[in-house]
Image 1 (cartoon, helix red, strand yellow):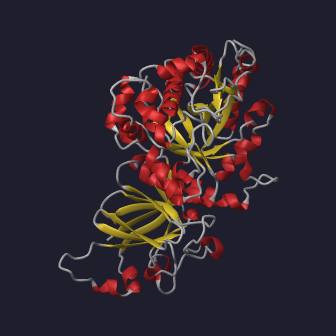
Image 2: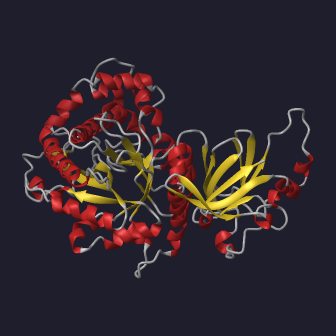
Image 3: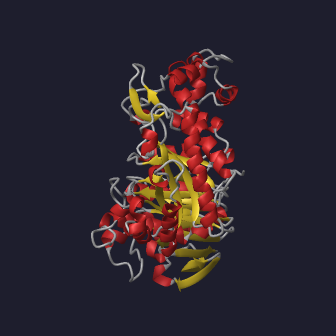
Length: 551
């Protein structure tokens, strides 16, 4: 069993950009009910479709597995030239058990539920019940077996999500059943105490210290009020990781679980069970999941936030590649903010994939992209076009995510031997005077760089790659780059810097061209010079990949 650092296709690294279907789309896959789903991802410019594979459809009767359901999803993706991430909706889907087969739901004695303190039953299977885990694991292993047999030599499916936003979404932070009570009173696993010591600034470490830095004791004794959520998180994480471990023995493929994010400072109370599923890998329980899981390859945040700083925080929080936890965003919205900040996730946090949810909703009734989805289309088009560069330079320090925040007109970037001003405003002082694009870009409402004033406006964004001291590649939209050598150390200022137009004209280019990649090779399509080259290095999404060499 291996720990995967990225998605792969037949052993070759793969950048997954795409969309997740709506929850019930895959039920009718054999009747053509997913055609719009496949088309929506293609229209968006993605390369991957994420599709629910539901336990109730895969095993409608105990021990009877519908492998044709799996085959139909894979066949549809192959017809449309897409890769697939399967979403295993089973014990958990949004903190409940909606997709559990009827024969499991109706046998409450054999498959116990989570109980509240007053004994009330909840619509969640208990993570403390071994029978629940074994039954889910058996079905998931049958899925892994069928997938290996049907797709192991082709690699259409690049990963599987084990459960969906797991945890208890009910008025309780833990399971008060007889087994749940027994586990809650047990000694906390030693591994978790070691994690609390190793991460004293984490919520786990702070709670442990506040409870007296004890080296043994129950969950409440060691973590106080946080003990209930911590106990649930450990149980849910071990449950899921056990399923992943068993499946990898059959088919060693990328496995992850996703997270319904806690509110943190943005929430009213940030209360597990009521505002998010208790036990999920939220900000304050993430260290518990890291300690509990050895088979999962990623713990992936679903990000629907509309606050810039909170969005960036989640990228930072879930990107821990040095500890073996790469960033992958499996669900996000198709809005302007996400269309921009995904460049931060990939360019600066090394994200291995980025998907939006509900891709079908991006299409009109006649199957065309809605106006609001055009922004996301441009982002996906740029990212897939530069995927070979991204894979080559991920986490190298030579790839830089460029993203314009609300109210921002420019950003200074420090590079090897160069300082770069990323201008998002064509009226900026650095671009004083006539600012050329070219005759192909005539729609000022869409194409002109400008300072954005709201989260629903399209922002400047892109990726800059420094492949040698003076050679660069760029993909971007609504931005313009100006380069200078670093200022002299004697305190003098180069004369060209004193007048903005001279500054941009003095930026000598040996070459600037637009093109695309075929496999690993850059193919030039169009060369720039004159008016199109003397006002900074500008980028729009439809320029493809821009290659330039400075003097």
